[in-house]
Amino acid sequence: MATATTSTGSTTKHSRRLRGMTARRSDTVAGYLFAAPAVLLFLLFFALPLLATIGLSFVHWDLLTPPRAAGLANYERLLGDSHALRVIGNTFVFTFASVVLHLGPGLLMALAVQRRSSRPLKYFLRTAYFFPLLISWAAVALLWQYAMHPTFGVFTHYLGALGVPTTSWLTSPTWSLPALLLVDFWHTIGFTFVILLAGLQAIPVNLYEAAIVDGAGALRRFWNVTLPMLSPTLFFATVVSFIGAFQIFEPMYIMTNGGPGDATRSIVQLLYETAFRSFEVGYASVLALVVFAVIFIVTLLQFRFARRWVHER
Image 1 (cartoon, one colour):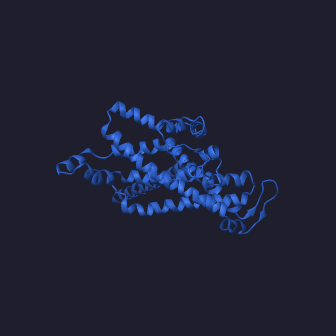
Image 2 (tube, rainbow, N blue to C red; image 1 turned 120 degrees about the vertical axis):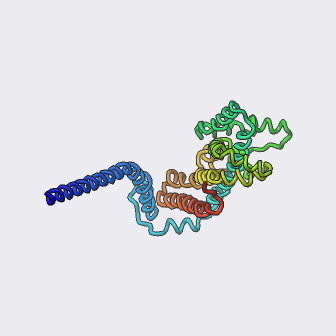
Image 3 (cartoon, rainbow, N blue to C red; image 1 turned 45 degrees about the vertical axis):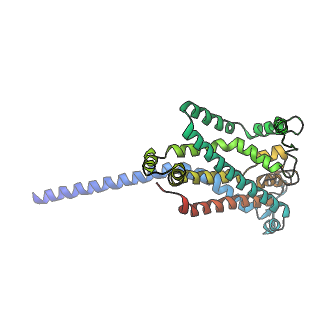
């Protein structure tokens, strides 16, 4: 009898172990199935194009004749190409100015709306600031091209009425890049503004109440409460703004075509012209890898130094 009871207990434990193994195996399979679409999309739209671009950077190819091996010739050409290096410099200047403009005024706008606005006004301003982002770059570029026309543009008209000297904004070597920065700011500031406003709204009110009880003024509350609690949102906005600005293409291509000279040409525009006007696919692939490498390295550095200033809640 005792032997039969022991045998039954052993069978029960074995059955439980089998059911546990089967459940774990089912969970593992389900995990792979859930991850499969993301892995497939990653391979299809990132890994394979990246490998193809690396491969093309070692050939000469004009899209009409078979590719010819080039070795490191395309990379050596980039190092001696003053035109490309000047364009990369332009892109860095535009990107740095764009990130600063988005974070500084964007934060001020978010603070003003968060602290001083009634709820209906807050909804209106949020919609008004975000609305330009819904317009395509082509329409925005044509609109501002008309507004900045040196003869009949409304931008020129109102500045002239205020006594501000006007110029041909989009053909001036001095003013063409600031003019494009203004257009970029008008079009995309709503995105940064909404992100920062959401970050401000997520800060617990009791932190401000405790700071007031401790006698902290507005400036000290901003420095000791708002900035630390908003730092993760600021970090995200910095990363996203840098990636977006370094890939700028449409306003330069439509409004100035990169001119005058190379004053407003971006690296993505140069990449497009090299690939589809000059049909130098190998050299264009090197430029594409430069774009990828810069974004990857700068983003990596941003994550590396984020530990020093981003407050973890």
